[in-house]
Length: 330
Ligand SMILES: NC(=O)c1ccc[n+]([C@@H]2O[C@H](COP(=O)([O-])OP(=O)(O)OC[C@H]3O[C@@H](n4cnc5c(N)ncnc54)[C@H](OP(=O)(O)O)[C@@H]3O)[C@@H](O)[C@H]2O)c1
Image 1 (cartoon, protein in one colour):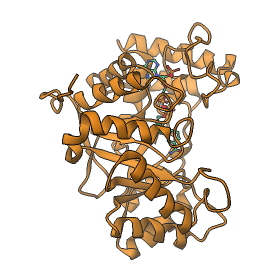
Image 2: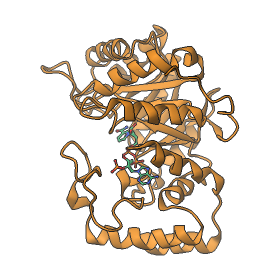
Image 3: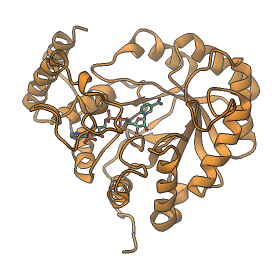
Image 4: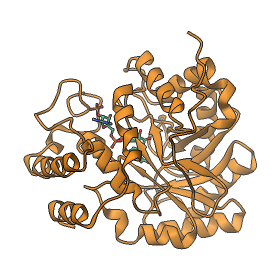
């Protein structure tokens, strides 16, 4: 059936400015790392993407290697673009990345100019796009000069194949260096994409302060700790969950008794707030104004619907924050 986007799609979403840029991103973005690959059911992924756009999620986050097989999430997203979203291209922020192993030989991995620019061309072909909105260096490469990686991002922007440059999983020193080079080149770094959740707090040490000082946005990935910070594993490991799937990046060992003890206590705090644990985990990140957006994953439209309700209750009282602090030990 022909898709027509919900006319009310912009009424319920919050849009935050990415650092000192002109770009607003939805407080909740959708990531296509899992559940959108060649091994997954295409129509399910398509319904999640439609549900997202209908709810004001304008930002879809991809990478060259998302699948499996690598590249298939971009191909599937390209199909949905062609059938459902083509008319809305100017309402969409589409990002992709290069930095992890993608093709054989010495030029399909890491941070060389050779790899990044060839990869971006491949991503554009797979998605059927002329340009992406954000092109990321997916991870720092200690063996490639930072100048080379940043010059590749700058060139992508100058060529019009990307509108903004981003970095992911760079530590604070690397972030400062990358941002300095990009500023000099004339393509300021828009945003940093680190992992961040109630159970993964490394960015609090100094990355968030660094980003604020540099005027960069911050978009948190795996805000639900790949599903651990939801009701998914409260009664064991369901067969259709990421931890049970052979292609999932969450191992059964990560669903450990120690983690689940914390998760169950956090779930009680969430229930007392009248929220699902997923909603509380998202709200907890968004209470910090330095967080531009959180990129959630979802394996069904219903999960996304649940996560979106986080926006209805974003504030925390002192007692709730204290309880979360006591449970997580920080
Ligand atoms: N830059 C990087 O290096 C990097 C790395 C990782 C991720 N990312 C980005 O971040 C995105 C999100 O990562 P993620 O998928 O790990 O995110 P996540 O939001 O932490 O976890 C998503 C998983 O949680 C479960 N879930 C989601 N909403 C739920 C709800 N309301 N109730 C119950 N369960 C729920 C689902 O698990 P089930 O599948 O088990 O149902 C879903 O697949 C990725 O798609 C990607 O775009 C970037």
